[in-house]
Image (cartoon, rainbow, N blue to C red):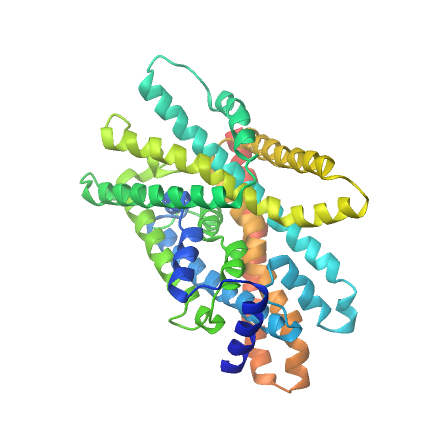
Length: 438
């Protein structure tokens, strides 16, 4: 491990520029994992039941941590093998197939395309959730300021289109980072206020179901996994770590960060559900009475946080295709002005797509569960074990490491079966839920 750590550090210092320590990496990881999604966790406990949902938070958190560690392990191994400084999710998948069995090598581009398309759909769903979250809170803010105003969520979704288009026109990474820092500070303030309010609330609901039914558990799994979705975050953060070995282990950045994230989600989910019970909404902030001055201020704060946070989620999508798009059009002799026009057109198309999804599924709880149990489950539960097999199976067979191969294969098969079960029955439950509402 020490040798691998030294090799990766040497390569990254040459290719990745400035590297950061474990404490900064942990802060960045928590910043990427803890967001408004934690306010939707109480809804998962409503779906599954108090203690079933509470247990699911820790079970899904543990499995997600294990699969994230698989991605980190594969990435570090492939970076050292190919003398590469950094690999994102899609490039790592492509490199894993390139370095694997001959029969898999010719399919490396298919594997990369599958992962990148899945990530695109996931981030598009995250953008739609941010869209709906902002609109729901903006509606409450407007109705509090002007009680006689009558405007629907769908009308606000359409009205918000132009401001979002103006926002995603920002190309400056420095400005993007500044917006991120301010948004994170506001998010921390909002979290503290909401958590204190939940703790001090005395009207707890004493009798809540410990478990509901199978469909409820499937809906809950999707909501919880959406909150834990960080596969697109973990590798970019790990690529900037000064000592890569500090990412793994029981006291590593990943384990520590996921433990803190799980505790915060469990706290928010448990207290949010016992305070609001069956009436809990897609975000517990929507249950809070806006007549209170501090609650109204928090909702105004969250509206600004989510609006500016959309830019960061949009940036993840743009960075997936932008470099290759510029290379493609430059190779065909296009000028910068023409490429800029295409770039901005694609930026606005992403806004249109996220707006369309928000109009199609305007309920915050429904879209969170649907995204989590489909694409989120695929990227968190199924793809990491498959990549580990593709990456390490040739080495295990060559070095006759049969014990490790069987142990890892047992866990991989288990995770894949769990993921497939959640996807199949979770999608069925979500579709039935949407049809019943319609």
